[in-house]
Length: 88
Image 1 (cartoon, rainbow, N blue to C red):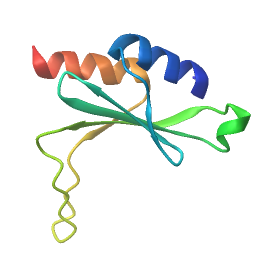
Image 2: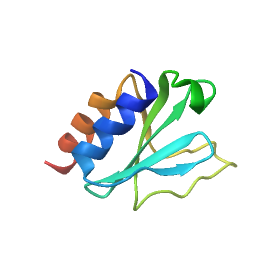
Image 3: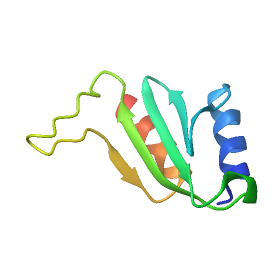
């Protein structure tokens, strides 16, 4: 999925603008953080990659135990479906 299409889809579903930090884009959906990155330069409208869902309540990373809360997904649709399952 192209980056521009991923941003447009996430903005439509969440009803909010993207929170961009460098090449990473964040959205909040039902108390969860959904993020993805640009594969290459943002200006070139490359593919969106690294779709990741994190529970906002559990964002404590622990480098000593190698614990990173959240799940990677193959595409943006799976991220939203996963959050819908988590909150059902």
